[in-house]
Image (tube, helix red, strand yellow):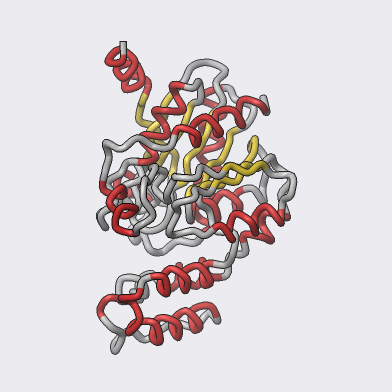
Length: 308
């Protein structure tokens, strides 16, 4: 029976595209059947693909697993590669030449296409991590949107969160002065000279990504959350070492009517972690066989179905 279910889900997963600036943006649509709620999964930061993996060591496939699990609950999903990356490489020549507004525009293209394909009156936006900012930005134009599901999403400006992440690892102590100075400059809209920057910081502050970082650091999730009246579900796992409880609290303070879901053992890649040590937590980032948190799936499915 299980193998039949898996085969049925695999058969329901089909490629789908929408136009990008210079080429197609590609995704995978998982169809849970006629009349099912439809959720657009917006990926997190960096070179994260439609499955939630990236070449920096994340192999946990959280978005693919979430899509399959939601399909089993009667919820359709679309997950996509970002413009300029992976299957969407043809959309723009430089994947770094983007803004949050660009990603929000892509989300609206998917919303239009999904409504036409499924007949749904509206589409749910699920933003994971940085994708939560994209969902909030897209929600400033609410046409065709059912509501927002913000998973491990920043509730404070990104400069604060990046500082906390760097400071959380004692091994980063020698890197903190140049990193803090760079963040201050970028937050002021000024590019940073990386010629004398320590090597471990070059990936974060590469000149190629600095324009996007400047845009990112100016995003205000609290202001965007206050500016939308769309139904909202805020989710943050108790074992998330990248986004703090303070972020979920800030979003909820901005939208006290939003629902909160706090799976106690779920980490940033939506997996359950037994212990509290950092090594065990990070080990799940490379484990595609570890199931995602069941209460996450149940909570999302119940939320989108209750609003039909």
